[in-house]
Length: 86
Image 1 (cartoon, rainbow, N blue to C red):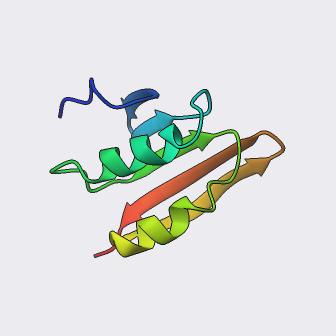
Image 2: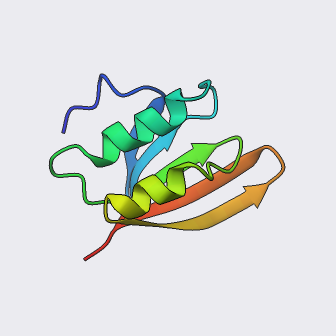
């Protein structure tokens, strides 16, 4: 699956697909995440690395059939795990 036109850093790992949007300015993080999860064949899990909690992303994920779980939440760092609902 080619991802060369998705904003932010991204990589595949054994636990799923990772995207780091922490260096992007709004609204680029949300745009990048939504473009990623809407790719054909993207089923997750997707790990989102961000510098703040993306509260405006949650309703968009829900509308698109994705759930989220906060994995890490410390000042200046949050990691979310996104999973497509079955």
